[in-house]
Amino acid sequence: MSEPERTPEHASYAEVQARLRSVAATLRALADTRLVETRDVAPHDTIVTGVGGSEGPARLFAWRLGARFLPLSSFAFGAPHASRLVVFSQGLSPNARLALTDPRAFDECLLVTAVDPVTHPEPEARAFAARLADAGARFVAHGPAVESGMLARFVGPTVAAAAGLRLAAALGGASFDVLEAARVYDAPLDAPALGSPLALVAAGESVEALFGLRWKWLETFGEDPHVFDVLASAHGPLQALYEKNATWLAFASVEVDSLVARLRDVLPSSHVLHRVRVPSDPALAFFAATAWLDAALLATLRARPRDLRRWPGQGADAALYGLGR
Image (cartoon, rainbow, N blue to C red; front, side):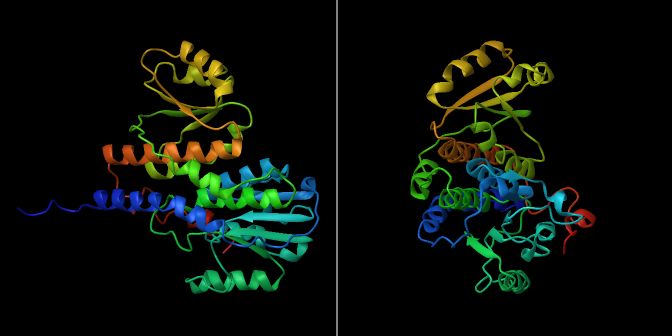
């Protein structure tokens, strides 16, 4: 009997599965890297940026440190004033380079990236990183070195989040244990395939921690899941989704159970609510939520196969994506 045809959709599923299986090991490898030396700069004098899959880790870092997140377009017409700049960019995308036009404009420029200025395998990115290093930029390195071929990044953003939280702790923020994050992420999971529209719900500071999760789903399925505070759900989101067959994911610690129960009470019978237990620490909650949503993404990709090496508008975004090259 001949083997079944290996379609691009099947190949995409296998590749995403392999990438997601590598996340915990890549997190553990991060724990063995040395932290960069930094200067004494107040959090309120620190600005942070990142775009696409790097926006979530950048926002998570800014929240943990008490710094100010700025969207990348803030740098399109000159650098905002601050003593420290922190840029998150896994592959040093052209857009991210807008923020890196002149590292000397800041007392300190930190780059959280997978591009090493000495060892990175892609010559152009390595050369650009080397020029930044010569200009005084310091690198907070994380893996994987290369994660290309698909619009969505499945490993890098999660590891960049850990690198950012580790950096925030070194700069005076709350403590963070990379190995504990790896253990939380690597816990056994059995998540179902999810329908759409999809709403991600949390409470308190965990709402900001969950923001980056929408990008991976958006770039994989072309659907933008909403992120809501559980109480904000009653101020428009519930009404907008009420007549649709919506799926709600409530990432909740024990303290939030009573609010999730109230959310369940207001949802119509056509809606599905999954309550996902996460730790009370919003930083660790991020990794528990990411692990669950990654498992659900894989189950959904099995149920709704897609060729992730092809996507709508492929190659048509140069006027925006190429700005900064």
